[in-house]
Structure formats: C-alpha cells, structure tokens
Image (tube, rainbow, N blue to C red; front, top):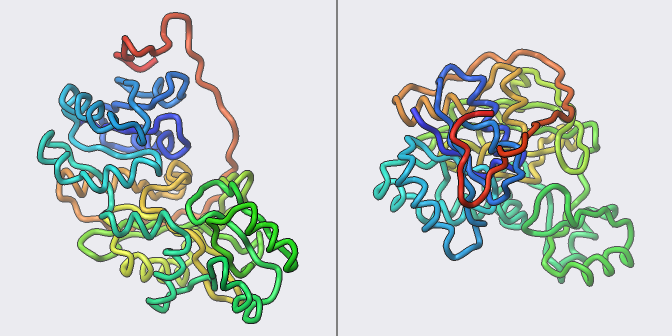
Length: 330
C-alpha cells in the first residue's frame, strides 16, 4: 500500500511517519511539506514540496501529487490543513481514489476553537473548563476567582497562553489579545493528561491515556498506564464528538474531575510515543479504513517515555528542491 503524509516538518507529521515505520503494514510512504529542510521528507520513500494550506493553489498542487502518486490513503500532519481537507474530503476521495483520514467540518470547527470546545463539552454534560469571552469576565471571576487562564481561541503549543492573577493583569491580556478565551485555572502541572481515541461509526473503539510533563507546549515526558476510569471518560467524550478516526483530548484532573481544555481532531503529537505502550493508532486506523479490520482496544503496556532530540543528516546533492523529489529513503 501507499500512504501520503503531509506536514513532514511538523511534530505530528513526523510522528505519523514513525508510527508507520514501526507498524507491520510495510507501507510505501510519500511525504510532503512546503519546506525542503523538513526532516520527515528524508524519512519517506518519496517526498514532494507542497504549497502552504492557506495558498490558493494548495488543493491544485495536492491534486497533482495525488494524481501522480495514487496513494491509498492521505493523512494530514498539520492542524492548518484540517479545515480545507475536511471541506473537500468527498471530492478528493472521488477524484483520486484516495481515502482521507479527516473528521467532518463541524468536528474540526469545535476542535480548532477553544471557546467552542468548552461550550460543546458544557452542553453535553462532560468535563469542561468554565470559560467566557471578553465582556463576560466578571461572571467567571465571581464563579471561579483568580488565577484565570487566558489563551487564543485558535492556537497551539501554548503560544499566547498566560495565567492572570488579578483584574489588572486580565485587563492588559484582553487589550493585547482581543480574540481570546478566558478560563478557570484547573488542576496542576502534575495532574495533566493527554488521551488518544479512535472513533468510527459514531462509537469510540480504542483509547489511550497518558500523564504527561510539558515543555514549550509539547509533551517531553509521558507516563502510560491503563487508567481505566479516565479512559472511559475520554471514550464518552469521543462518542459525543463523533470524530472520523483519531482525536486527541488534553485534560487535567480538578478535584477528581477530568476537565478537558483542548481537543484536536487528528492524530496527536504523542502518536509516536504511544506506540511504545502498545497503541499504534495509525496502523489501527489504516487497517480499518483500507482492509475493513475492526479496531480492537489493545492492552496498554505501562511505560515511562523520555523524549529527546535526534538528527537527520542530508548530504550534498540530496536536498529537495522545487525541481526534484526524493525518490528513495536516505
């Protein structure tokens, strides 16, 4: 089979490639990214340069590549591609015979916007984080007090995130970033978790929950166990969300309640980490979509995972340019 992965320069895209390499699928991997210095391009069997997702020619260039490569399945490796791929999933699958692992537009919209995430969870009686938009902060202060968290409604990797401890700090934060959501500060750094789910036909089929330590908004230490109660809570949230395939839920325990503060309608930045705990979600998803194999909850192996830097070395003459493509793994 042939798998096409975009975002080969992103942590997510690279994690998907690594998960495929650790699987039993023996897939031919085609990678794409706008930047020729993206390490994941050099891990693939074939690699291409592609436009940025906000480029008007993005879909045309992607279509050219799909027509040339004829992959069996396309997996987006960045958040920014999700809206356009979700909106055009049916036309892509029809035109090129390539299945696309992407959730419906409504799911992508909820996950991309942290205010919509909070409202979605609240309306369904799930573990939400009390939140408000600028203009309603006095009600939230009355309910929760300080400290509060301020973050962009649309954002990632803790960019624009801050903790405010009084009204003056909150006023300045609102003035600096008007398009924000204000939330209760819940739990602690020691009670933060990340979860992965796989959902098909409206039912969550498999979950994994890991406690994590963060650095610069990314997981750099992870602690995997079975966490049965937390896994059930995340499966319940996944059922309500109705993603197609993968979703990522990030939450903190707050007085014993798992309060979800972020949803990602995609595979996770910890996808490559989870395989060490026996949870290769990319393989499970691909096997289900291409071969009709059922997604079965695997046993979670208790492990502690310590992440670290590594290197990819590109020799003279091997650097990808717009006029060439990498024809074999280097």
